[in-house]
Image (cartoon, rainbow, N blue to C red; front, side, top):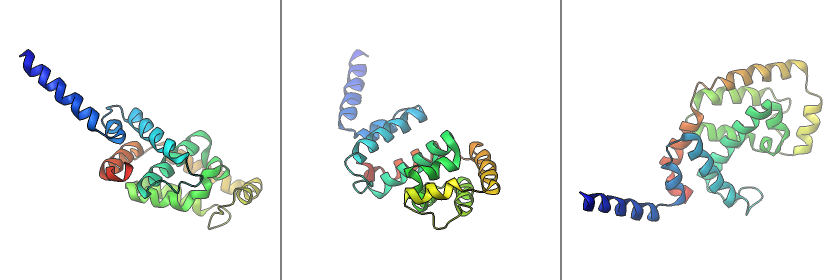
Amino acid sequence: MKRTIYILMLVTLINCNTMSNIEKALHIENETKSLLKIEAIIWKKAEQSENFENLTDAEQTFVYVEALEAEVNNGGFDQYFFNTSGKYSQETLEALKKIGAVKTYKIVEEAFRIFPENPIPKDIEKRHDILENINTATSERWTELEDKFYLYEENIGGLLLKYVKEHKSEFE
């Protein structure tokens, strides 16, 4: 019996040592902790580049969805547009499609569509100028859409983890 336990422990240790950091992160049972670990791995890699050029398409997809979620949860769509993340609005919509977040895509697409200038400018100063003059109707509609976003009819974290598992080789 002791020998069997020893062998199982040894096999587990060997497997852990041969797993990539992403695989280890995917083995974390807590969804939030797993996502945070993956995010840390990607951000460490992203620090080497200003515009995410050194990230794979799959890693960029992860970053765009995480940034959207963080910004909207922290300060709404106007914060998303105000910060650097607003530069990547089109990429973010594509990322939502890629992970299969259909309901969230529709909410975000509408929020982006009512931005006063489309396509949404990549230039942060231009977005700031536009946001300074946002009308009440747009602001109120964004608030309504934020409320829908906060309902989380889809498990964005779960969809992201599924996406990472399906594209694991692109996260190495």
